[in-house]
Length: 138
Image (cartoon, helix red, strand yellow):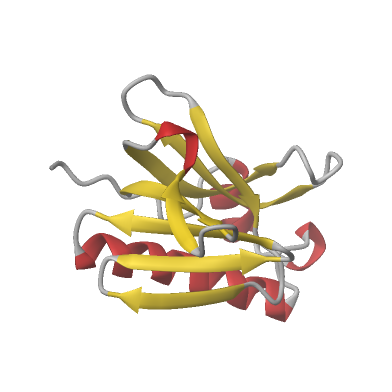
């Protein structure tokens, strides 16, 4: 999904573009995050389209608070950090939200551990992508 990645600027009380702004390709994938100390987990990653620079890497944890402010702006909080996405369309926002909710449900059930996943789940998760890598052309 293509979106502008935002972060909360508590000093001004507003949202500002992360990493210089511009559209980023945002996916939810299963991999090793820099903060995960080597274990595999679900991560939201954003890569700026114009130069492929990474602008977002956020591990998805149980208890993540997700808010839909309007049809094209959603934000979430993990611990003390707040991130937001300004989507190109409501359909993009719905697609991202569904993918994130499905990951949160898996975490709540505890079914993301390899011992409890079915072979089919393991196969799709080991390719590094969850089912929400959806691209839309502008």
